[in-house]
Image (cartoon, rainbow, N blue to C red):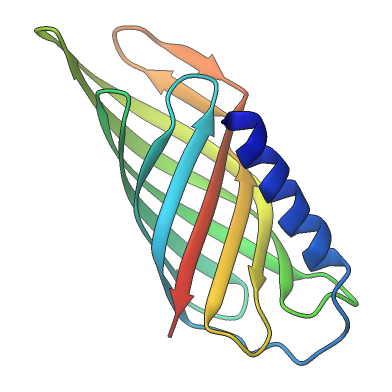
Length: 158
């Protein structure tokens, strides 16, 4: 399943980089579905992204999966990719908190999550997609670092 999802995301990214120079409509806010996947559990839930200015955006997610509920928020700096209408690169990151509960065992961890990724607004359609690499540092009872974490967002723009 993870290989299939990665293949689909890679295909979308390649498709996006080969688009013609059609005029892309910018967006201010996008609301939809976010995924956090890679090493460990896959988490899914609502995601919102909002641009504060031409380059700065905030993204927040509430994700569920693997006996966990995760709240995370990011600040991202975006830049255009010349010749690829609607496609931007971004870097950023932010904090998160993960609540885990299974079999009478409860654990709460704080997360530090840097990001690097691509943001694509489909020209002429109210659809935005994002893909990023988000290595995650867990801080708490069982501190660890997961380099193999990724995010994918599929959102409706307005």
